[in-house]
Length: 353
Ligand SMILES: Nc1ncnc2c1ncn2[C@@H]1O[C@H](COP(=O)(O)OP(=O)(O)OP(=O)(O)O)[C@@H](O)[C@H]1O
Image (tube, rainbow, N blue to C red):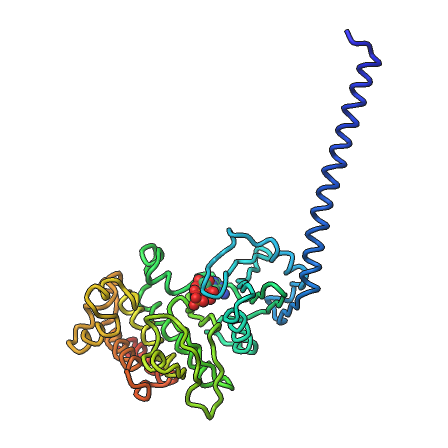
């Protein structure tokens, strides 16, 4: 049997080892915390954070925001596009933002960030996604947006959600009117006017009430009131680009009207502009619909997921509006103010019957 001094020695060694391990772990944890703090402090001091004051951001300090941003990981990603990755940033159970991270290094991405700031800085409109702030650092930029809980229209029309929760006719119509109102505001009420240049269903986001919000101003171009167009490098998304813009690089509000016409066709038919079936038949959504309207077969082209739960008269009216937006000659296309009025009328007409 071991004598009691030896047992006492063992116990002392064990206690010492326990205390030492605790001290080592605490030291390592402290170093990790201090390193993170330094990274946050360095990032904050080398960058510039601007948070626009509003009820949504009043409880948020730049430092608290940066801390949360540093913790973002792949599981927080809600989308990604040609210019960057969008994360969900949760502040507390009632507050969350969408943060778009744009890595620096490419001229396109840097100018996308500047365009987005120029265009969105002062905009407050119920059909345009709200920019709450931004952050400029040497390695990356951040844009802080209001979070749209229902994601984008593209997922509801063509993604998983099109099967799980297909949009009913009233919602589709409301989305069309909301997006038209947002676009009309950019074209006619903002000074200088704003040409979006990338209107498509994935850039129409949906708030908690399924109201449309125009988003993604990475290609937006400012146009002074006395200008009819702005010459740019052709950019945007295949299937949505107006023919004259594609051919000449002349961007105008009428180019957005064309892209909006394509979105109307998506809402009506549930088909993508570049749907494979069209490619196989050597046609495209726009041409197919033109033929359908000419043959007065509109109700057969309406998204089958609607069944018979839509107003034929109203659908015909919206097909007609879409076709006007898709006129090959831009001068024959209506302005967005006119499109908005026609869309509003098409609904109230059927509601009154
Ligand atoms: N404020 C937001 N709230 C919720 N989701 C958002 C928000 N902003 C963007 N998203 C999601 O992130 C996706 C990517 O957005 P982003 O604007 O970067 O690219 P995109 O429009 O899909 O593509 P590209 O920039 O190449 O045209 C969107 O389609 C949308 O689903």
